[in-house]
Image (cartoon, rainbow, N blue to C red; front, side):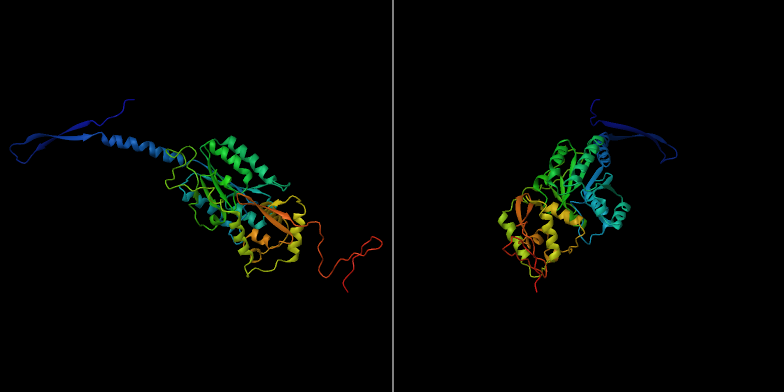
Length: 361
């Protein structure tokens, strides 16, 4: 088809001059038009069509609620609304589908009903050992990918480093990756995302613009997923702080005079859990283990605010090792030494090689 260039168009109008009743005269009026307006209409049509088609790009949300559980005090009825608000704030207009993965039995009946009634699908994954939920989520994710070729937005809510490889591969296959994670999320996971939100801030309705780490996977111009014009953030700049600085911040929190004593029953339970991991356990897995138990821990961690600071307040039973990328390993200290029970002490008597437990008189 030949391109359409501006060409003049002449129209002729015929009318009768009746100013005088005796001499009526027929006149011609010539008007000059141009085809420029046709060019304008045609040039705007592809843009309107592209914008209309991009509205239909679906958003699939995958929420690992064991790894990213909502903080105490969050209105569970508003979680779906907060997730959708963050998506819409960034100009993403496609239909949203949210699925929560994990051991549903960890949720109260009220919370299950709240999530279901607000449009969130619950995918029950029975607890079958470490990373069982991650493996099941990956299997379901691979099936979803086989049924949903790009363009598509994939929104993962998790801070688990194990998902970083699959997210980077999906991004290279033109899936637009969105991510919501805790503050301690590893940089390699964040670097796969176009947009990343801090999970707890998102649930409060704060900073819904999020951080933009990458342009859309199919390029910055003419993308299915829009274009971000401001400078991009560096996902690796967040965790490049020296380890010494991190330790000082944590120590200041531990020294807070507002902190309350940790009950001995809590300490014993944590030590018992750590004894099951001679080589140590990640701080994320330990927190998940405590959440699955019936242990009642104060919402503010007895004034320590953060779970890591709460653990550091027990140096006699555990120690934390910083492994980089915001990850900590928790190890037990002298796990084989028995604890002295309240009101009792253990004494060992030499002679016959046997020991006895004597009650303090």
